[in-house]
Structures are given as C-alpha cells and as structure tokens.
Image (cartoon, rainbow, N blue to C red; front, side, top):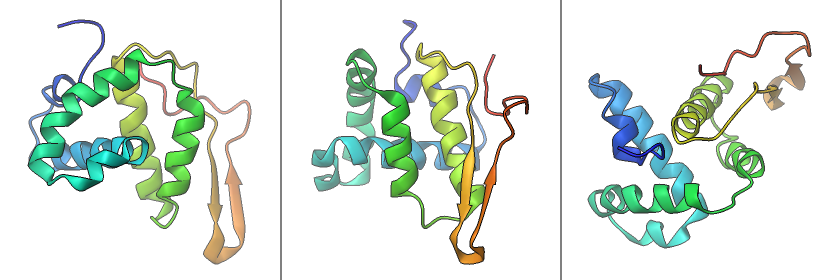
Length: 130
C-alpha cells in the first residue's frame, strides 16, 4: 500500500457495518460534490470509481480547507452533531492520505436558535489524528 490511501484502503480498517456505511456514504457524498459526473452513476458504480477518483483528488493540488468548507455548506441542513461527524470522517481519511493538519478550528451556526458556537483558540484541537 502506498502512503496515499484510496477510499477502500481507508475503509478496510473498519469492521463495524454501521461505521463502514457512515464513512462510505460521507466519502461518496464528498467526492460527488467535486466530481459531478459521479451523480449519474448508481451506488455500486460510484463505489468502484471512488478508489480511482479519491487517489486522483489527493494527487491534484487541491485546497482541502476550501473544499472542506464548501462541503460543510453542502451539508448545512444536517444537525450539528451529524456535521461534526462527517467532517471528522473526512479529516481522518485525508490525514491517512498524507494531508497534514495541525488542528481544526470549529464554528457551528445554530440557525434555528439564532446562536453560534465557536471553539476557543486555546481549546485543544479535538479533530486531530496522530
């Protein structure tokens, strides 16, 4: 295995069916946002193409932070907990694929409550993977 993990390489670490389904659907949703041609395919075809597309994405000079914020906007209708879970999945995957993160600053808007929560700057990063 190379130091660049495909979606299947990443998912092979997990055996729990619920975890696999959540992680696979999150990664599928993320890559469909940046590769619209995937939306034309059924799930089985997309999952086969995800291996190649995930490695292609990693090899390109992508602005992951910008793409992650775009994805966050894409899933903004989800509950805050779901948003945090999906972002954590992506960060874990990209860390395993060679991206480096010093930590993540989290800001969550609770539109229905007209409230915003921001991680304090001295707060230890919760989403880092070592």
